[in-house]
Structure formats: structure tokens, C-alpha cells
Image 1 (spheres, one colour):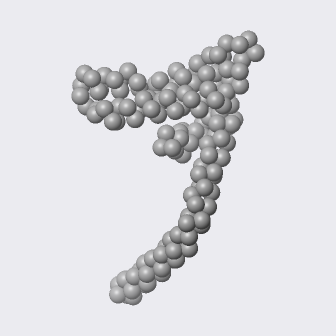
Image 2 (image 1 turned 120 degrees about the vertical axis):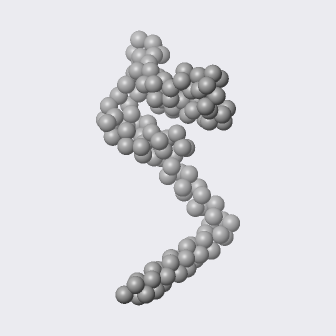
Image 3 (image 1 turned 180 degrees about the horizontal axis):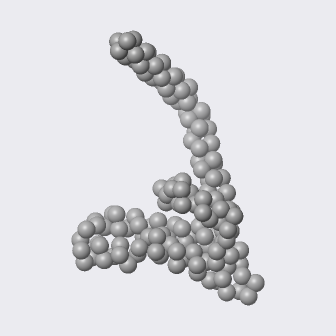
Length: 141
């Protein structure tokens, strides 16, 4: 999910809203963004990256490839690389996934009976922090 957080919340996505790209254009853009060759060079030649960091970069690239392939509209001529990717559709799918995951977590906590306790602890913690802030403000005055 970190990959999609980078893509959709990093601020770069604003420039792509309402646009579409072909699969080949998107893959070329992702190769530049994820710097796969530089990533491999840093791992093998320079030694400035460890294998976990390098592998994470490749996994992020693969996740974007999978998502774009699944959300693409096939080309009329049948050419895979010319399939069209509507970036707003990908964004909507990602938002649906996030909403589903959030709802799933909440419902699981309700079934386990721990949601009330967590909310109570957060409310108590907020009250305690608010009281501390009031005490500090009073001490400063």
C-alpha cells in the first residue's frame, strides 16, 4: 500500500487527473520514476543499497505494472502496449481498496469487542493531553 500512497498522495497525481496514457507510455514513465537500472547499479556495483531496499523498489514497480494492466482498456487492434489506462479509474479503484480495508479493520475490531476499548483509550488520552496543555498554558501565564 505504500506504493499507492506515494503515487496518489505525493502530490504528483494532481497533474494526471482526467488524463489517460497507453500502457507503453506508462511503463516508460515508471521505469524513469523507479530508476530500475540505477537501482540495480546501486545494489550490485556501488553497494549503496541493501537487497531489501532494492527489492522493495522493484516490487513497487511491479505493483504499478499489475494495477495498470488490470485497469486498462484493451486496444481495438489487439496490441497490448496500446491499451489505454484511464488514470482516474486507477485512482477510484485505489480509493475503493482503502475504504474496503478500513471498513474491514473496523468490523473485525467490533466482532472482537476491542473497538470500544480503543475508542475509550483514545478519548481518555485526548482528555489527558488537553488537560496537560491547559496546565502548561496556565503555568506560562
